[in-house]
Image 1: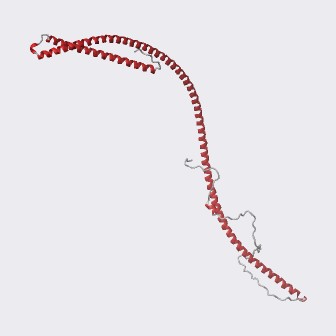
Image 2: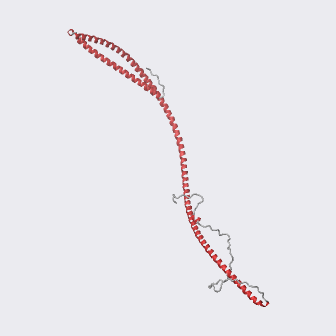
Length: 333
């Protein structure tokens, strides 16, 4: 059976046959019907059936006066009565024969009409039988197709049920596996969480200890740097004071020598013998002043670098301690 064939809807089948509507409706002949008319008396067969019998025309006898027969004419009167009776019988038989022939003709015509109706009904019955046979064959084919389709649907339904049963079994098995895996993973997660918490606790303790050690080292280093810088700054300040005094003295000498030099230039004849000596001293003093200035600048730059480095270290240590959730200690200045 093809898959493209549409299924017949359930319920009664409505079949429209235009031929059935064109069939004339005849009255049912199952009931008792009677033929109306006079009964026909069939005459006995004659000796010469080949010869046609001429119809006997009944002659109406003329009216006659009643004659009173005399006792003498009793024998003659009896003979005339027999002849009259015979004629009357012949006339009656002829009349009945005519009526019978007329009725026979009418009946033959009715028989022909009925035969035509019977032929039409037989043809109609044959058509109906052919149609019924065709419908029965079509119904048989549809029944066979529907039976095949029903078997296919039953088989497909059974396959679906079997497949669904297999899927349900797999689903139950997967649920059990998922439950087991979930329990296993929950245990592993709890174990890992406990392990990680212990590790975090240990790491925090180690970090706190390291931070304390580093804080102690840093504080110690800061104290040492502060002591060093404090001592160096006092010594440097003394050196700077001495150099400043020396610079002032040398500056005064330079000013004095410049004045003498100017006066000697104004009076070239009265030049002093110590001019060359003073000039060499002046150059040495200028060179010494430049060296001292350079040393002072270097010391100031070194102190600035140390101070900047310590400030950066304080800031980094503060950020590191705050990121670990520790309280920031107060560092000595």
